Amino acid sequence: MPDLVHNFHAVLERIALAAQLAGRDPRSVALLAVSKTFPAEDVRAAHAAGQRMFGENYVQESLTKIEALADLRASLEWHFIGPLQSNKTRPVAENFDWVHSVDRLKIAQRLAEQRPAHLPPLNVCLQVNVSGEASKAGVTPAEAAEAAHAIAALPQLRLRGLMSIPEPAETIEAQRAPHRQLRELFERLRADGLELDTLSIGMSGDLEAAVLEGATIVRVGTAIFGARDYSH
Ligand SMILES: *Cc1c(COP(=O)(O)O)cnc(C)c1O
Image (tube, rainbow, N blue to C red):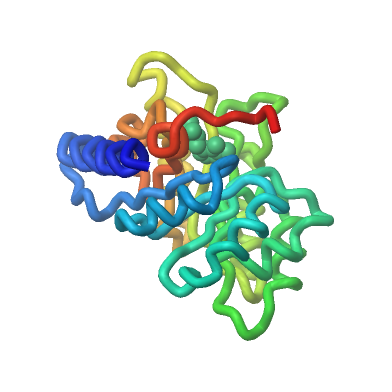
């Protein structure tokens, strides 16, 4: 736990330094702490250190954690960031504040239908496959405008912006290239009348590159919680 708190402050420092380098207000970059595979107690410790936004990838695991942390519900935000199958959308629509990984219109339609009326609209990002890898989820940049306009028109959802998970790259220049492409797409959609305010890019290994290219949310797991163990 002391590690976790130390790591958390080190990540905030990295964000602040990158923001300074980019000439941006550090408060314009939000940290999403990606707690997948880590226990509820780690989320509780990060929350006690001041963290408020948490990201999860797996529906069943996240529901158990959300339940275990129900006492903190009013003071934290749950963001779903993993691949979402259409038969698993209901618990996500009912329990999360955000979904970053909307990768097709059908998923958005189901989330819109299933978002309970007593809750505020679900915040969503459209996932874009910028690098065009066949293995990666997301709409292609060419499909993004049509999908974004269709999602923005759905009830009980609020389309906030774009998300991507580019291929890992070694140099900061190589890391920046796909982030820049996503930002340019984001700017075109805004010029086209969509009220978007969120660019969800950057992880433990490339958050500086993402902040330099305009990230408003960086999604950081390993650098806060440590290496993930998928063996159980
Ligand atoms: C796991 C995950 C992250 C966090 O990755 P780290 O490299 O551990 O910081 C960010 N975004 C998504 C979509 C993820 O699945």
